[in-house]
Length: 268
Image (cartoon, rainbow, N blue to C red; front, side):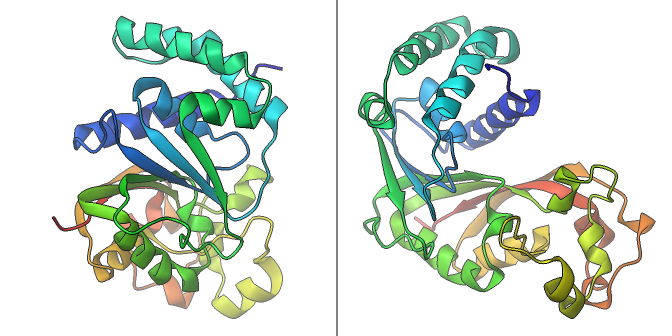
């Protein structure tokens, strides 16, 4: 089936527009997508509008080629109506998508688009050379990285980026339980202290690190990045639930945030 949730297109278009706002992408750049997932969605969308080479990075191989083709087919049908970009850019993107849809394997897609797929179960970017990247992107990924691994990941970001280049992250700080229980409060996890959370709620399938927006900003800065911009994309009302003691020191704006963006720059 060629049906995808409308938010996929809206999200990818919004993320790319945010990156463009800061001049962080150009033809010829080398990118890395962290947590590329089963259909390489953000990379595919970005590649339609820029002639870039992208390293697709993940911790496990959950790729599904029929799913990829389904998403690409849906995007081909809806691109002109749902993506607000100049007609010549849409023309180019449609032609490239037609070539993508003629591919018979991921290897053919990668050869066509200039993609490279890299898996490291430990989450380390050690396969990526120092100072080789112009931009690191991720969407809905950073909240799934084990909290203790974040400082090392940030150091990896700093190592692999060229001086003056950026990391652009969209982060979803909401409770991912809402995927399965839509009636749950978007920040339901704020109710639980660490011991209760680890014992009863934390799991490997939908692990979330429960970090707040300010935590991510602090980690970027601790690694030596300059936070060029940050914004809250979506919010809830955290005052509707009882907040566990370890979250009480956060501002209400922090606790209310459920989707945020960060643009972080490596010093020139």
